[in-house]
Image (cartoon, rainbow over all chains, first blue to last red; front, side, top):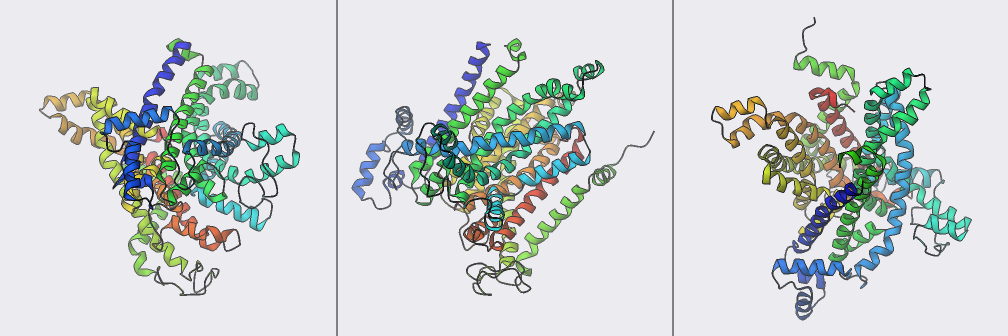
Length: 337
Length: 284
């Protein structure tokens, strides 16, 4: 089995290299003088020249690439012009906020979409099946910012159930002592119930928005996979042996049907990371996405490129994790290796 | 034994089996009409300010209400159709024109072609695609052309994969061998024989991609990239209204957002319908 794991790890390497190469090319694709962009709008000619020397922009492209990789290895993603802080430090500080939202959404989406897909598969073509298809397609169609704004309007303005979309915590609360950076976990570890509730309430709307968006791919995959598993011989045998329908469905069919769904989760993560940028803007969430947007509007390029690189690497690693998870779940993979 | 259905009969069968598809086709026709005829039929100039009281709710005079600058939202939403659909269509067309030949070459010629092209497509897919689009627009500059380019780039892998799969399957087929024996060179085989066969799944992809391209363009505009105000575009219109929705003026964001949703919904359903027509086995 370890050979399979190693093979998967090696397969991820070219993707990592590709991510780094593309991000590098993007940093050099800026029309005009990259040194001027990195020095900032108010820089003098000498400052621009200094930046040019510092970043090695006067050297040939290949050498620049190796310098870039060297910087990355040291964790140097450049400095943000607007805040003067190292980009990596700011990204790492803000990453937990984004991760908390994305992880919770994934859990919620799976909790809703997988049962929905299973039910739709047991009665294909029924009204439930059509309804599920309509709901999931409707969930995917509106842009995430629109869903978010609508939810904010209905649940905050009209009904008053949710708090104002102003970020991770009501201003009267201060964040819990940092253990993981995820407020729900940190507040629970600190034993602060009021704080936990406050953090939870602020999470509801952003998480709901993202969940609605990713219900469709998960539900569709579960349904398709379940339908094909339910028509397999071993399910027929299980039924013929007199096992209860629920046992057949959950213990036999679902376990096998979940395998392609796990693979879909990798793709779903990509959507979530992309849509998290927009959701963070809608709800004022202090994550990496809003950091990148603020930098972009201020023509501050280093944070944007750091963001693209970080998200690319994160995505490759997540897909690798999903691949490895698959190896662990599916015993047949060992035989192929 | 009953006679097999003609294409039209098959289409009619799919439509009757699935009335939602008919709705999608009607909506699609509606959007096309709006894009083509909209700007000449709207009651107000979409860029004219103060044609009505600022931030007034929907009424008889202003069907969708007015925004903070007193502009008629209905006119702006209808006129934006052309820009949004235009951007999405251009991006998808560009993706198609570049991606299909690349994928066909990769699938049919194999070897280095396959390795390089597949590696390229995989590298693009290694990124969360919206993030990559952001990065491309940030690097190349904040223009509509770059939005189209960025959206085209992130959609390339879909066409490359579809074309590659179709070409790969038919590579060793007897009729391809026959074509080669009758003197067709590689280019002719790719263009005349493989491309038409790859077209049906590609068409499904085109329709689904249109919906996705619209969302992409709107998303990029919402965060401030691409189309600049006061140019009416659905994403910008929603962004303009975002600050007002939490204080109760819901119509400024609602109507452009609904249009977006309807357009994407239409293209998603259309894609499903095309898939049902061409290959019912792939229904999900």
